[in-house]
Length: 291
Ligand SMILES: [Fe+2]
Image (spheres, rainbow, N blue to C red):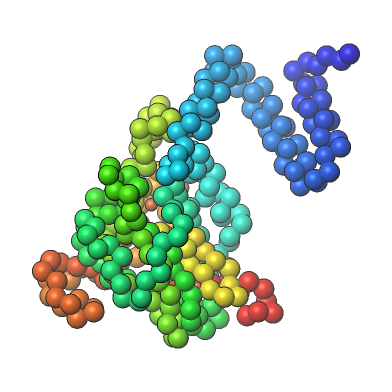
């Protein structure tokens, strides 16, 4: 029989990992237990606070559905998501920076021809996106894939809109032989992360606002290159300086050039003002011998 005091308990728990055959798991768990115990000791966590934390994590888990990922939202709003991304995907040799995936990615968006309108029937001001996907040495990358998604012009993602069951403002576009892409969608606006769940309660309690600056999401990939999960942020958007999920990166802020009603880049006449945006994505080769 052996009992533990408030110091020896930490080594006792770590000791139980002695036979763990997965060395990386052992390393992560050892550090997790060490920091968790230090945290409890440092703040002298009370039993009601501990129980509130248990209830909070339970609520976060129970708020998750097929279309809602409250745990990712918790990770995002605590800055953990962007920290993990920044550690694992450093922008090197001029490659495009990564940022958060966010809770609204929906795998399996349709692959559409270049020039398609991803936002048919979606509220918002039209925007024409174009640019190239390049290797970091400047070589154009044909057949690169852009997996694109955004909210509408009012800041709502399809999966948030009551009664909307299909994909909206989503699509996959491939580059041509010169690495060029172009498509039409809308100019996204700032929006709040979901605030009707436990993470929203946490934000209110901390006095933080829930807003993200306007952005379009993209996962850009190409054969022989490292894929990048990123955004393009709308220059001048509200909340660029205080993104609720800490995902804003200056290199991803782009000008949306405003045009009066008239012929768009594809020749089609638009009765409303519209925007155009141009951005080149540079990807790092997956390994030096594949550059
Ligand atoms: Fe988003």
